[in-house]
Length: 173
Length: 259
Image (cartoon, rainbow over all chains, first blue to last red; front, top):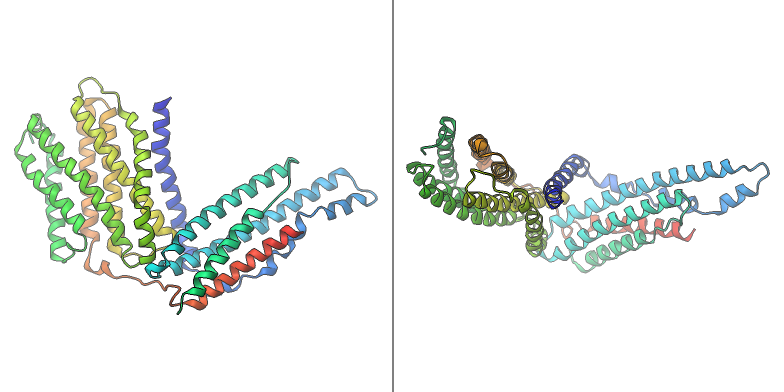
């Protein structure tokens, strides 16, 4: 058993690191071609429909309609989850782009920007964990348990925004 | 050298020549001070090689000289990777400052994973020398720590992404191959029957030669050119725009929750 664990840890850690590196190299192209136009194109309006997607009012209204059948509600929920996931994928892509730009800027900065590196690392990890948690909740909601809560994501992005705003405000040009 | 197969002997001499060529090129290109750790590492490999050429493979002296040289080299390799970390981040003071604070944690993480692997070749097969076996376990574990550390550095460099000199990329690539081959080659020599030791040793010599060739061919004076990346101090408008956009993401998420 311990021998098996030794193999799993040794080979597993190596495969994991190589997989991460390969993914990064493959994604590098999109990061390398990142430019201001791309991030300038970011729009808040893109996420406006997200707010309504998980609201229960529409389902309540649908149920109150004559001729409503249970399968209609099931299909409506399925479609709602699918669209929500599409928005979430876009949100993740936007976060990745903006975070990549922040990393690029910090990488070329002086030693006084070192705390920002730590913040960026922490934010990346927290965002990744918050996304995993959200996806887990979406899966649970699919089997009828609980409801989706994206508060951790909001707290994360808010922290990121505050940190970056603070750093850029106190550093003179 | 007595006791080696013909191919092994030829590869041993080729490796020695390649070590000398690498040292000469680093001196000739005046890069030996920039890559002092690499220069010293291979200088310390080349000197004992001369002694090993004169000693029979089956004697205790060969084992003593080999193990002594390898111990110094393994310790030297730890210095090499730390120096590599420093060289790679030389033009990126913000990241370098963070890296200095995390280097011990990264080393500790790599060492913890390597400790798990000690169990892999704990059984000494019939016909294997316990002393040689244990030393191979020590050497391969240390090389595995170095390999993991190099991969962690690569992850950090790619994540930002940090544009490094081409020579640094060559330096890292060569060491990844070298430490991977030592780590897994020595593991194989410990878990395979003694009859296969010569074959494993030959493959290891081929891979060492390949690593040396990567450095000999890859490290060039032109590879020292640095591509600069603008910092936020020099680009405050971009950083402000970025903050605004992240704010927008936050606002969108906040609105979602209110609904």
